[in-house]
Image 1 (spheres, helix red, strand yellow):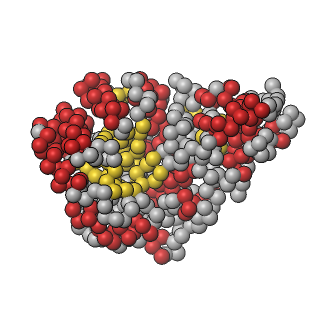
Image 2: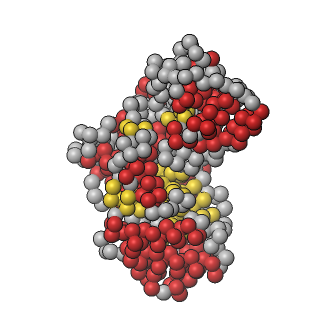
Image 3: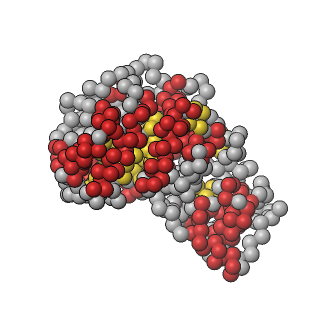
Length: 469
């Protein structure tokens, strides 16, 4: 059936509300220091500034690092390590002293914005899970004493191993033995304090363990046919988004749709052992480069399209003293000498007109996306979100084709993109036309949650979607 575009004043006013630009996502970096050859923290601050990075996460509260970050304008997430959880849980006087020594002494000159209470506590071999929420509550009380509770948030990074089920994404659920003792109390705490859940997500691990079942293109945000979730009908074009939506589904199942999520670790190793399938410099460049592009030019996931993606890449440097397989020492974007392991854009400004640069001054070049066919264009597209509902899609379509100035001639009856004759297909074409016309600017593929960005060409019949390049 043809999509008649009415452009009534009511529809135009109604749809204008959808066009309030969504806040874009953010790219930040983890600054780990399990190495004996890293540059001095003052040099690291210079490096971060030169790359346009204004937010980092630490794994401790090292005095030299926090002092170097003073008055830098860089926002910092610090950490209370797992080994201090039992003490923090047992005695608020301990957290009072810890906050005074490690937080208030540096803040606000050093812009500490959050404390990661432990790290992947549920898989800690020392069984510190029972201490987590009590430690968070004591820390919150200590922050409140110093009037820091409104400016510094508390959370705790969880690994995807906290999920009982993650495939399909719609079936996401937390492990039953964690739900009552810690997951619900922690989510209650995050809700009450206006904080967010920290999640560490690594598609590399899932791919390396299931390379015979998971497409490498799907894992690296490259062109692929996508996977349809049998539970909700949403199509996923990246393993990262599928993993994140499994967490959202697990939270939703417990009634915590209102709690936000920040991805506090994700990355891909540039080197690995022989049995670490997929660990390579080109794949690391592809994953991180395409992830940055996806975060900075898109909206949220298919399940939460209106929530921007906020991601901390792991990691700033290769760390030569990390134990475990070779990959553990090769997640860095930079070598200790501050030269790039591979060249990818890290900011929205770098995405515009981004050219592939030599790796460490050599003639060898690794595209920012790790894929020669797509690296040159850095192409992204805008498509309709079926879950928005017909009324919302129609209003947004009317706006895009009317006041928005999208080129909707190809979706008129008898034209090249009229078929398939569906609201989703026609809206996708119109939204993408608007998005490309606006130079793929942040927030221009939102339409009040009616659209989201993809990193591969949409497929609706034989219709070809322009990229604007």
